Structure formats: C-alpha cells, structure tokens
Image: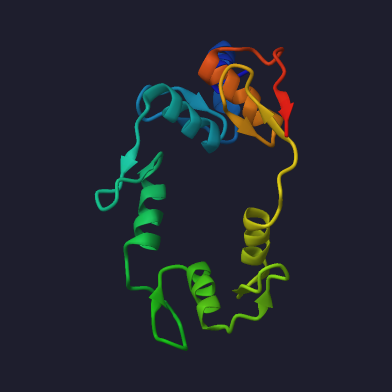
Length: 176
C-alpha cells in the first residue's frame, strides 16, 4: 500500500469513527482541507502528497513541508550569528552539531589511506574515500532495455519500473 492509499484509508477510517475520533489523545488536522491525522508525520505526508505545498527558502530555493523546517534551515544555513562559538578561531554557529563538525577542521590529519597515503581527519571520510576510490565493484546488474547499471538490484528494478514501466518480474542481468 502506497502513502496515498494509506492516507485515503486512514481518512475513511476516521470518517467511519465519526464522533469517536474526539476521544483520541492527539489529532492533527490538515490546515488546508481539515483531514485529521493521528500523527504529525502522517499529516505532513498528507500535505505533501495531496496539496503539494512547500515553504521555500528565498535565499537558496530549498523547500520544506513545514514552517518550522524552513526556520531551522535558515537558522542553520544562512544565519552567521549563533551562540555556539569555536574557541580556536572565534567562528559562531547556530547549532552545536555544526560547531562540532567545524572543530574537525582544527584537528591535524591523522588517518592515512593505506592504498594511496591520503590523509583524513576522521574515519567516516576515510571509509567513504576507500569505498569510492579503491573498492572495485565486481558485480554489476544492468537493465535489459538500456545501458543503466548498478551494484544493487533494487536500484535497477526501480529504474526499470520508472524508465521502462517494466515490473520487477523482469530480472536485471549480471555483467562483468
């Protein structure tokens, strides 16, 4: 069942319950059509799928489902002032997490790639580098209709459905 079908089934259930819906502990009515959702996530999904309304950042064009999401984005990405200050260089950040990410720029590069000698400040970037630069992908699946290839079957099946309207019964082929 896809999200739209689920939202429709949930709406039908809520209508069938009628006055009993008021006994539920928390309700999230849609501000556009009044449909009641049981969770904020279902409400956001309904708004996104049914009304396709988004809040757009006027500075960069990023879109968000909620005003709060847009406000958080503006605070994190576009506001220089913040109450989390780097004690090494004085730069300020709106979020503690952004300060923590920034602090890695002051650490010396300590981790070395064993294959090429490139230096990294943290293990996550080293791991990403090794996968992208040095790991040979031995098994590729390819679309039987076009040259599209990927190592994960689900991506090829999704591609086949979207690009060629072929259902998953048609299996992607292996190639070298």
